[in-house]
Picture 1 (cartoon, rainbow, N blue to C red):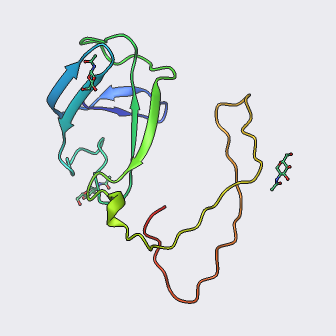
Picture 2: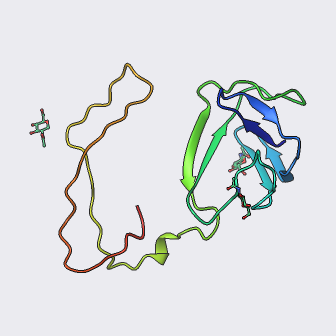
Length: 136
Ligand SMILES: *[C@@H]1O[C@H](CO)[C@@H](O)[C@H](O)[C@H]1NC(C)=O
Ligand SMILES: *[C@@H]1O[C@H](CO)[C@@H](O)[C@H](O)[C@H]1NC(C)=O
Ligand SMILES: *[C@@H]1O[C@H](CO)[C@@H](O)[C@H](O)[C@H]1NC(C)=O
């Protein structure tokens, strides 16, 4: 079903249902669901799917919900930044493409918080002509 979340992270069923199940399968270890949706649904409760990087989030409850509204997922959740349209494949990038690493030195992630934000300024390598960043 097609839901949206408000600022308090509460889920509400969209008045306009735009997601269409095309495949579903479950075995002892995996649940696989395939669905389709228009890129622009004209529903103000949906985001447009664009050529840019989209943030995809997922969550699940360990028990089947049946026809009941989704239940809180607890820690069973995650996210991924992904280009849904025109995904960049590893072999699209020429092997001689220059790159550099930005790495924090000796930063311990604290064990007592769920989330740690770490700000760090890095000096870029010196370039003598214009370059485009094609991947981060
Ligand atoms: C369950 O399904 C997944 C996804 O199709 C597959 O990779 C896995 O081998 C299957 N496991 C069993 C025990 O059939
Ligand atoms: C989605 O795209 C349509 C058509 O281009 C546009 O009118 C609308 O404002 C966009 N909606 C959002 C939330 O960006
Ligand atoms: C990182 O910490 C180790 C152990 O304390 C130390 O030997 C090393 O010099 C540190 N490296 C940097 C870049 O600060």
